[in-house]
Amino acid sequence: MSAEAHANNNTARRKFLIGAATGVTSAGAALAVGTSTPAAAAAETTDWFDVTQHGAVGNGSTDDTSAIQAAIDAAAAKGGTVYFPAGSYLVKPTGSTPALTITGNNIRLTGASSKSAMLVKGGDGILMRMSGTPSAPSGSTHRRYCSVDNIGFNGNGKTGLLLELYYANNCTVRDVFMTSNRDICIDGVEFWDSRFYNLVIESCTGPAGSSAHPNIWLRNSSTATAGAWGYSTDNTNQIHFVGCRIEAFGTGALWITQGPAGTNNPNGIHITDCKFETSQMQGGPHLKVDSSCKHVHASNIYAYAGNFAPGYSTPQNIITWAGIASSLQNVLIANGTTSTINAGVLLYAGPGTTAVLRDVVGLYGTKPTGTHLYYEASSKGDFLVENSYGNIGGQVSGTVPTTNQPGTPMRLVGGPVTDASFTRPPLDGTTAVDALNKRLYVRVGGTWRWTALQA
Image 1 (cartoon, rainbow, N blue to C red):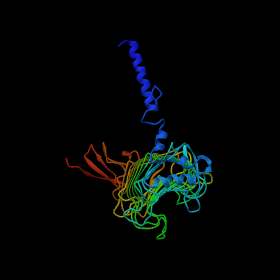
Image 2 (image 1 turned 180 degrees about the horizontal axis):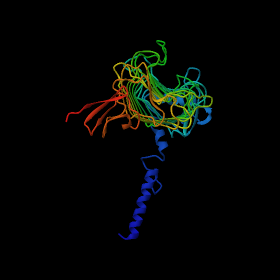
Image 3 (image 1 turned 90 degrees about the horizontal axis):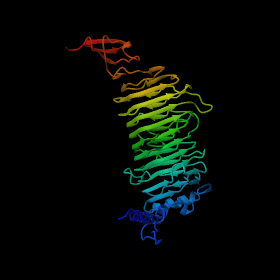
Image 4 (image 1 turned 60 degrees about the vertical axis):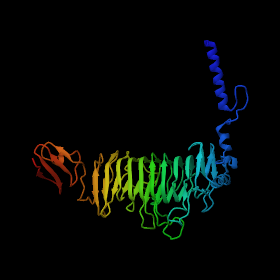
């Protein structure tokens, strides 16, 4: 084949492929398969529900509540995807009735992206309810297998939740952006087996000094009144947060607690590669795990306390850690030139339990008004704290335990061991080996005591 013929053949082939992709051949005839655009293809399927096709406008001023709810209800019949094209969708709660309610299982809400498709709260109240009912301990009445992704929630300076997750399981929140809410953003009660990936929350807070308005609250119950909505004697368990970011919050980022009712334990919570950063503090802590919790593990965490919100100036404990069979590790706690931190970590260990901290470091621009670690006086259990220190200020205070408290890993020293053998003052219970004279040293009551090692 000549070069000219070869070139003509390739040109014809490209024209055919382009025609196949667009639904039109090079001769202008429509192909029997395919559609002209992905949107058109989606509109023809029976499990895709575009909110604009149900009347939503997305201009930020028209009330789109009824139109979006109609799309959700249509999907609820058998499950499917509710789609939000780029736009600002104004939705309005009414009293105690949420603006939007997920009325079935197996529903996915997805948008064009977390910043271009935005739900905007038009009044105080709950923006979205993704909740079942509490009547069946098996979870059969839970809201199940639902997800939210690539969409934004704007609280618009209003109060009330952005996303309620009561009596729900096997749900996923992915690539979601939340902002400007004057209340809790996500509240989970009796919430199981679910995941949060790349969730971003910015500029949300409760009232100044509040002890009940973190950005995310996982708990077993929200009320102490038996039979009331949010009352549960079951628990929240097996929840993962991966790569999430919470910034510019006022009254705490993520809390995991028992709640006001029941004696069951929140458990199996995993927090990995997350960032909690704010210069708008008016309460705290950033991360809280109370003594009712079991098997909570947080790793690779950055917690920054840069400054206070206007009118507030009370230093806070940044992390309170009291979970059973739990661990906090690979954590950096930092601040700047403002004295924002009381203690980097407040520690509690219940009877028969051990609180585990590894590589929890304070990189402070301004030293804590207390110390890097504070040990609760009521602790009855043990502590395992390794390589956890602040760069400036006091290291530990409170009721420092006398059992199972190594403070720093064992080290080898070429000669008699003293406090000067360490870069920071070690705690009682710290051990070290004099490698030169073959002696094992233990620090007891501020004094180093030794015993000879077997030759």
